[in-house]
Every structure is written in C-alpha cells, then in structure tokens.
Length: 355
Image (tube, rainbow, N blue to C red; front, side):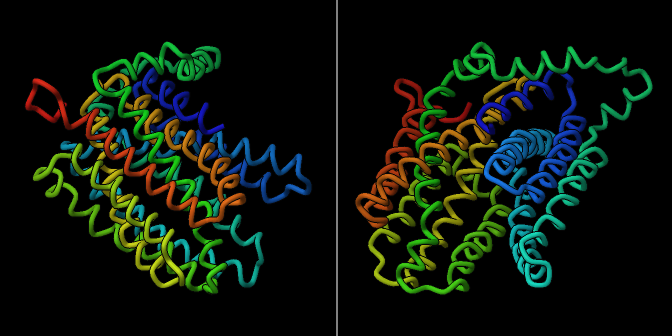
C-alpha cells in the first residue's frame, strides 16, 4: 500500500501546489486507521486496518521532507530540522513503554492516534510559505473531489514515475536506493531476533535501537557543514557502507554486545543516507515535482526494499540462519554503495559531481 500511495500523495501535493492540505488529510486518515487497528479483532480486520494505515501514512514523511527542504533555503540545512525527528524517536520510545505498562498494548494507540492528528495540524500551521501568506486573499477555489482523485491517481501512473526517473542519474540512483533499503529491511527485520538468540534481554534489544537514534541527532545537526565539505552524493555512498559495516559485524557476532556497538554505524548510515538522498533529490528535480520525487525515493524505494527484504530475509534466514542473511545484507549494502557512486559521483568525461 505504501508503494502505491507515496507517489500518489506527492503528485496530489505538487498539483495543488501546497503540501499542507494533503498532510492534514493524511494525518486525520492515519488516526482513523490507527483507531480501526486498535479495534481489530481478527486477521481480516487487522489486515484491512494495516492497509488503510499504510496508505494514509505513506505521504506524510515525503511531503514534510519536500517542504522542509524548501523552507530551509539551502538543501543541506534540512538535516538540522530532521535531527529533531530522531530525538523524538528516543523520547516516544520511552513514552510508549510507559504507556504499555498500565494500559497494555492499547496504550500505544492512545499515543499514536492523537499524535497523528497533531502532526497534520502542526503541518498546516507551521509549513506555510511566505508566498502563500501573500496569496491567501486571492487564492482560487480548491479543486473538487473528482479533480483531487484524478491528481492522486496520476501519481501512480507509469508516465509520472518514469517521467521523474528518466531525468539524468535518477534512474540508476533509484535502483541503488532500492537495493540499499532492501538490505536494510533484511537486517533490521531480524536483528532483534538474533540478539535474543544470543541471550540478549529486552533491554539489550532496546539499546540496539536507541543507540542508532542517539548517533543520528548530532550527525544530522552537523550535516550542513559535512555536506558542504564532501557533497551529499559522497555522503550517500559513505552511509551505504556504514550500513554494510553494521550488517557484517552483526553477521560475525557471537554475543549481543558487538551488535549493540555496531548500531553506532547504523546511526551514521541512516543519517548520511537519508539526509543525502533528500538533499540530492531536491536539487536534481524542478520545484513542480519535488513532492512526487521525494515520494518515489523515500516512499516507493523504501517500500520496495521493505517488501523484498522481509520476504527474502525470512526465506534466507529460515533456511540458512541469520548470520548468512546479515552477510548477504552487508554485500547488498556494499553493492548499493558502488551503484550510488557510479550513478551520482563518477561521471565519465565530466569532473563535476553535483546536479
């Protein structure tokens, strides 16, 4: 559902010319879907609620990213805004744990649903551009339902997606991104199981996830200076190989401690890869397809990787063991890093590396 929905939300926002309305709608629809998920009583209702939730939430992050890059003025400064997302991840992890104690699993939804609505409202209030303030009094009536549906469907048409990916270097970068996120899903989908196999407690599992986020915050905040020095393209390559290092250590580890330590490299990898991708894409496409392009790279590519990583990871891990799976993930990260280098950095006959 995310695979289909992400570019659709992006095309809708690009056609309207404002991401705030779609983000607000996505937040409210996500909260409703989360409520349905909380009330699900069987496999069918659970699957339906998950599908609706995935379709609704798919557009929020790409749309916020596309607007945040534009508001930042310089694309590299986006990292300073995104750092707060990693900080919030740490805070909400503890808050969710506290809510699960007295309320059980339903306590998670007591936080999740309202926060989704607050996200939509915050986007509406905070993500307005100065040009939109000046145009408020003379804005034309918004498109009707039929027009909105047509614009949303345009986002998943092959013409729209291929039109973006046919731009110089975007197609090769999309393939590399999908491979990296596939490897990422294969690793993170099963690393907690590996820790428990090696005798790690729930606290060790939590530490593995938290350490990555702790590393991301300062690195994201320092991203503008790092990107000016090395360029976002090279940082994407470094991020892919940092992910590969984490996967390799996890494959070779015989106790939980090295896996926890390797999550430091995971934080480095996510910060550089994610911020580098958003920054580079924002500079490689024109403004009228910004949201669509971000939806393709931080929505469609990630979703393709999640699907492939989960299916292949389960099959390979079940048949050959998780160390083999993690070793193959390390190879996938390295291959993805090389493909990014070829697509974005190495340009035969042209010494330039930036779009």
